[in-house]
Image (cartoon, rainbow, N blue to C red; front, side, top):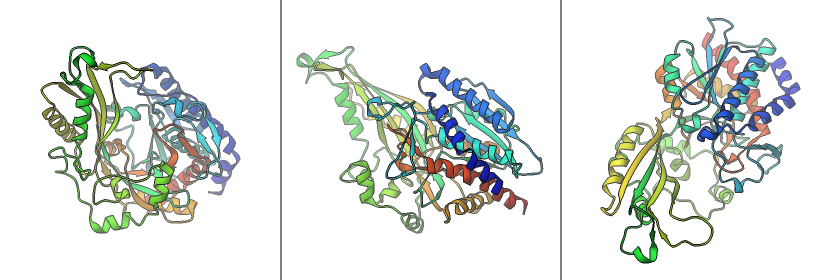
Length: 463
């Protein structure tokens, strides 16, 4: 690895400049107004894949945003790694909470990132982590040190549910065939505590509409006599949780896998300070399902949260209106054995059943994904563990993540292989939030670690 590491060191400035360029492109997949920018990002990725040495690089059109593919097959008898990543980003709103422009990347030092961090939308999720793989591949190929075959599948719809990824994978299963999928869309515990994500929660995401009178009304004339949809929606949402903060939807917990006391004990050995956690968020107390720790609530237990709620007048000044409609976006994080379609249907049935006769309710499902658990006794996990131990100087801790990457279960179904979640972000990097950032330490550490994964995985598969 000496030549590879030397190449990385000599090209650090260029690697950073290229990342800053892609971060300037507002590839917001959720907003059709940015479709051209998403496309421009795909073309940038295509260009850099070709420059890195990949063959057969192509932008594949879908009914949504495009998928970029490339590969380097050096020997059909060697194992093949399929690298997955996404180049689309979350909307940057609310813009007023950013300390710098979300698409004007700046590097600033922080207490957690004393070497500096890149502040920009997508810096960590997932442009920064996706781009590590291109540069690691470039370093290995440039120095003729590539020990295996590599394929890239980089999509532009992850932040909106990867709707068109499944048909693409099924239609191109032979082209995408591999021995393992490698992705970096997760985090480590800390910069001095490496970890590997071994479990992901699933997701059910939907929107609800509560409709009352056929037009906005004067609250003085009609208030107290006609149902206010905003009031009704708030009451309905409040009823979705029990006093112990468990979820009150019938059948919601029927399929939840109960984690053993031994596994819960191991999970809670991970370095974690509840006081530091509260201080970092500016809160006085944590909240969640009774009987579980904060680490457990954010990993092995399902949740229900309102992600947005609106209705009525929200402009400057006062307007005494009784609104005609109210809306909310609601997500439920799911754990192993919970099926997102089944949970979505259970939510819809329950939400419609608790609506008073004074309003009409519409539930619109958006997207979802299956939970996933990856084994820790496979060559790919062992290779990841050895790679992190090599670059961090200590063995990583297996952890379950609270986030969702629905495509992990898809890859296992379609390709018949496991995924390795080799992330380098931190939970404090504010992904999906204003002032998202990614440490320079983490970016370079990822580029340094990925080649070791290639090497260890190839060695283990050949033995």
